[in-house]
Picture (cartoon, rainbow, N blue to C red):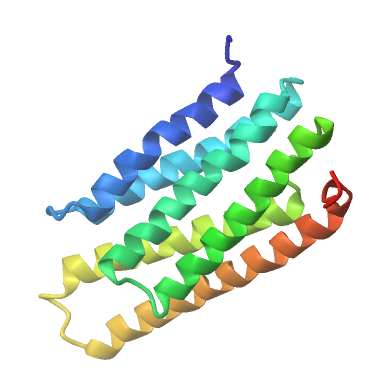
Length: 197
C-alpha cells in the first residue's frame, strides 16, 4: 500500500517513539535536551499531518486509525519514561489513568470497526487531551534538562521545587483531560457497544 505524505509523517512519529524513549532513559550528558528536541519534532508532525490531509483531501481511514495510535505511543512512552525515572508526583497513578483510558478507547475503536466498519476518528476533545499532554511532557522534560544543567550552579532549592510542582500540576491536568475525553468518546459512540452482538 502506497502511503500519502500525512500517513508517512504518522509512521515517522511511530518510528521516532522508541528512539525518544531511549534518549529519555539513557543517562548521558544532554540526554534530556536530545529527548526534548525529538519529542517536539515528533509532536509537530502530528500538527502538520492532520492539517495537510484535510487541506489537500488526503484523509483516509488508515490515517484516521493510525494517527491517534501514533499519538498514544508517543505520549505514553513519555509517561512510562517518567514513571521509570520517578519524575512527577503520583506518576504511577497518572500512568495508570492514561493507559486505562487509551486501552478503553482503542478497544472501542476496534469494536466499532469489527461490528459496523466504522472508523472512529479523533475528535476535538481527544485532540485537546493530546495537545495538553504534549505541552505537559515538553514542560517536564525541559524542567529536568534545566535542573540537570543548573543544579551545580543554582543552590536555591525552592526554585527547583517550584519548577517540579508546576510540572506535577500539568501532568495531573492532562490525566484529568484524558478521563474527560474518554467519557465523551464512550458517550458519543455508545451505539457501537452492544452486548448482544
